[in-house]
Amino acid sequence: MAYSLSVLHQTGVPPLLDGIATREDWERKLAGIRDTWMSYIGGLPERVPVRYQVFGETVLDDHVRIHLAYDTVYGDTVTAYLLVPIVGGVRADAAADGGEESRLPAVLALHPTNTTGKDDIATYPGKLNRTYAVELVARGYVVLAPDALTAGERIYPGMEPFQSGPFYERHPAWTTVAKNIVDHMQGVDLLATLGYVDAGRIGAIGHSFGSYNAYFLAGFDKRIRAIAASCGVSPFARDPNPWHWGVRASWYTHLPRITSDLERDEVPFDFHEIIALCCPTPYFNYAAQADHIFPHWQSVGEAMVQIAELYEWSGAADRFVSMLGSGGHDFPPLVREMAYSFLDRWLKRGE
Image 1 (cartoon, one colour):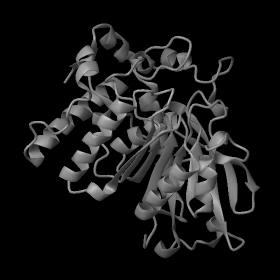
Image 2 (cartoon, helix red, strand yellow):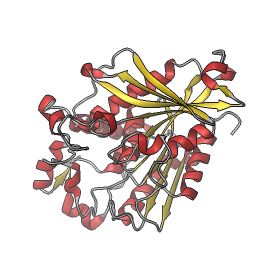
Image 3 (cartoon, helix red, strand yellow):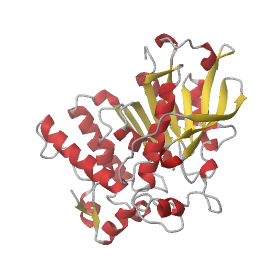
């Protein structure tokens, strides 16, 4: 399934449905995409049982912020904030009796590339236009905001944020991409055990680094019932810097094998194919024409057209929304409100 990168730069993203006439045709192609992706991320190990430790909590006007760490694979733990709504002066975790009607929808909120990790999105004052975890708990969601490895409380001792070298010293055949996926799956496991959470109504949201971690997660974990992704799609086609996905000795390495492929003018897939693993999960995507991180917005638009065609062909056209704005690498208020409304539609009863 490898492509010539120089050809992709000329022709754009490869069509998803060319030569696909039947559901069986698509399932075969999808299996190939999944197998290739799994081989590049290094596989997903079996998850460990749910176990977590609470360090403390902060009671705010409309929610409680619980500081905790939950277990993940290979003896590691994930630091996170669990945000629990307060409604009418009553905490949701105290009010719920465990009955189905009392359980709340939940969202895994994944942070962008910020040194503070979860604090960027789950505390005030966070960075402007980034506090989507706080805004979602105010809308009645239980929100889990974990630190990704190399950010927040998970920066390696003596290292700068987003320096992943120690990870690859310990796991030379694995990737930070798969590490994030399994860590976030463990987060879904945690949410699903909470008596006040409806395990059938869990979504994922993120901006930039958090955005692609959200759809990477949803491609493998069908417990994610809706995705909202901002400024996180970066096709190889016409990308002026595709090397950012490969080895970066002094910063964050996503997919080490990609570097040798790029040296041969090859890529094993393009990223709209990875997004296709999410279909038919409801998916909201935002991209921006003045995005200095992922500036090739025309290719992003082409990718979204391909995904829209896939959702329509799959009988799920109403489950996909793509927005293209004129702004920069941001998650502006109007777009966030649209993303939240999309999540409400698919995760709240009666929406």
